Image (cartoon, rainbow, N blue to C red):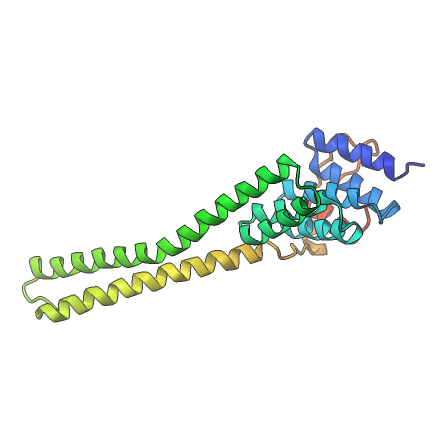
Length: 234
């Protein structure tokens, strides 16, 4: 009978070979046999991250932290998830916790510096974009006014003050649209952390594909694998 270490080794081998679904299955079987091993959750978190299952990757990272709060790698794993979805400030907090536990780790320090750089760039981007939208609005407003005066017999706006006012209104609209776009991006980042629900019907509708490298020749699609993982059936 295979124990948790056997499944962990199989998971490691599948991961190195790029067979992420098979690695996910192996790590889940290991966790079912040894649910208190934080390294198994960390490993599975990395697999989910590679598969862009950010919700489950973050969930496993949190579980690894809960099992061993003094393990730097658990905090590092959570920071990597947050960095991947663009939540740089939250990622920096997790990197900080990892560095507090292992300050001489250059890998952690380099990752934290990278996240800090991305965070700074994001802040500058968010400050700049609304004014870019306003600037584009001004250009569009001026072009509309010129077109109105040059190519129409009776311009819709004749008074200079009204022309300036119309350009300002279009500029404000551009500013608001840019702010709305930034808000959409923030909401989208939060959406990445939502669970990806897979229904029984969706699982049945997909065609079977065979996992590579399985000794038991199991056959599941990605959707089926996620549903089985969710139900703890691996």
